Length: 152
Image 1 (cartoon, helix red, strand yellow):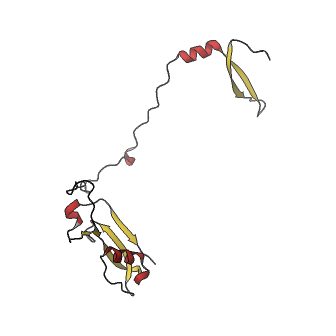
Image 2 (spheres, one colour):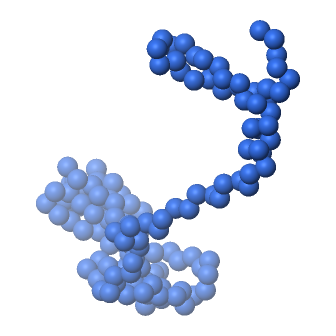
């Protein structure tokens, strides 16, 4: 087929009569020049996320406290170990081994069901520093609680 000097490209259309066959339509040079002269389309704008996905601070949750010790300060924390009926007994419990290595548990009792080892500022299991000071007095209330479970 001879090449027309005014044709700069072609696009393929799927043939509606014969499935799987393509029909090539020429693109005239004048049409291509007109398309290139048009300004580029604006970038797509995305609507803001729905209200249910926006993070809003709860009225009940206190604002996070600023560190009184300065940024980048590290503490050695003493966690809290909890015994519950569903815990693993004795030295087989990973929570008990972590608590013993952490220094908050002196003796492992073989019959005690050790279930949870916690690090955080929760009021029922407050974390302390080496000198016995509550972590919440130094850093304020933390928005997280690290919990290691040993469940049988």
